[in-house]
Image 1: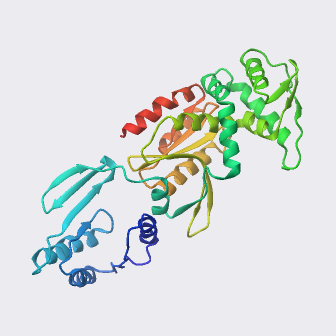
Image 2 (image 1 turned 30 degrees about the horizontal axis):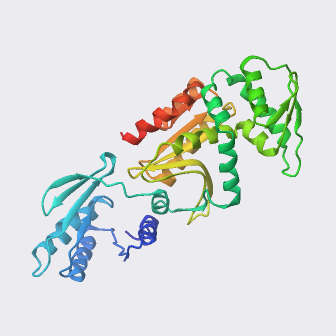
Image 3 (image 1 turned 180 degrees about the vertical axis):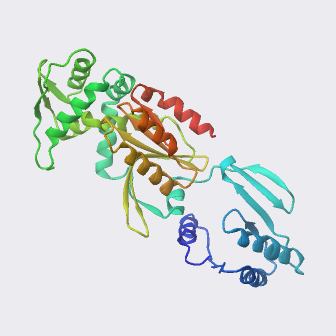
Length: 351
């Protein structure tokens, strides 16, 4: 098919794996042209062994490949009967129609970069470099607190919004300006006070026990302002052991449009991708918009089998939950965050 960038992206992914690729454009304006091109291709192939994957393309193209190309190769003197295969990706199965009808499970061969390249994306940044090394170090240093936050997110639900607002005020709009001292409008108690005491133990802030709080650094304010959800996801994903790899804080760029997107975390297992988005603030009126964007982005970078997963420290309302179901976005919010390990195990087992 001409002018199909998907073919170019697939070629890039194969070449990145060291596989030689020759791209042959098929004009699919009419059936006659398709069959003529299939006959010409059979002549070029000669006696070489060929496997025809007829999973993609239009129905006329599939018929041309099977009825003309395969039939010609099967009857051409000196030629080998072609292997015909259909990839049932939804069921992770290869269905061979020739030379003998047989089905077999797909092998887990795709990794993160394979899927990204096939979809027309490339990584701009991953876990390498000093910035990401520092992030991993800090995440490990406060892993105990991060796990505690995930386990108790339901009890601290309402306080998250207040803490997020103070962290945002401390960070300000300018990266060169930091105002660490902030004030609550009330004196925190209960689970909120317990959180502040634990954060103080990890040297993330100083709390005077009343209404004054002082963040120790910009990194501490970013963590307490919502970054902990991303670190919680990373802790749980690191124990999942997917066969295609996982990565937090991945920045990707589309090779054609140069559009840049940041992914909180991605995981690949059995040739499928899980795209994780982390939110700490209460979803506002535009929640439906970013749920839709997550759905679109996940399938853009990971294909039709990609699964978007939203992790939210705050609960979603009924309307937002309905929108998530509409766009097939899985959600773990508030008290459900601690179910992430069980969710991951179920996703790894497949549909």
